[in-house]
Length: 252
Ligand code: 13P
Image (tube, rainbow, N blue to C red; front, side, top):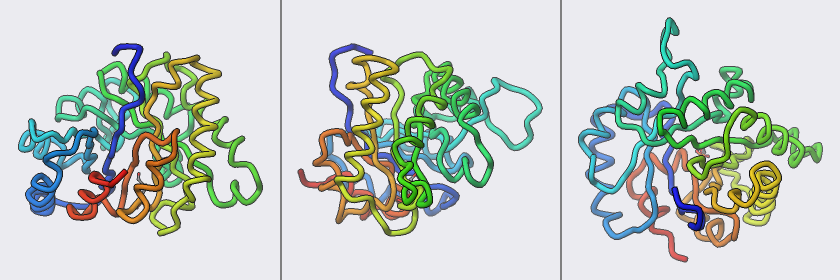
């Protein structure tokens, strides 16, 4: 990847544990006519069961696909897991690493996340590394410390690269309808970029950084107006073609 680009704008959908083939087909039938002319990178991360079907069916439609999780080991006796190679083979070009739901419900540590990011990069998958503070941490005034700790530890083994995407997802804003104010999101993402710069130097200015947490058609434009925010990772509002299209087509 060249060294002179500014961060790509990326609008990514995280479908979590929603949709089967029928719903996915309806979604794409409705979405594609609505986003024909957009220039930004659009990524859909469906459940693993849908990845191959939709990546095959909608190859060349302008949308890229991502997995929601991988194991960090290349292959082995890990019932229920999928490897980076398997995700790539199924058509993924991205993979979400260290989403807060995986950190909290499945005890994923920063160390595991760091190895997942490495495993992804080794298979030419672009990791979307998620970090974000809980409400308790924010109220205790620990937000920046938590972000710094999670960022550094989640990248402990990772070589500098603009292939990585970083998503700031405050846990208290996920699925709650409570979006971070643009000023809070910008402060956090600006801080993450400054920390990454300490770690990786100028390359940090070219890494795409997304905001995630109750992104909707009504708040995307003000979030995207923030200088450090290069896109969004969208949960609930990405499940309906109309609202996801409205987010993709936000007016500057
Ligand atoms: P919501 O957009 O539903 O708040 O989810 C955000 C998220 O977790 C994306 O990864």
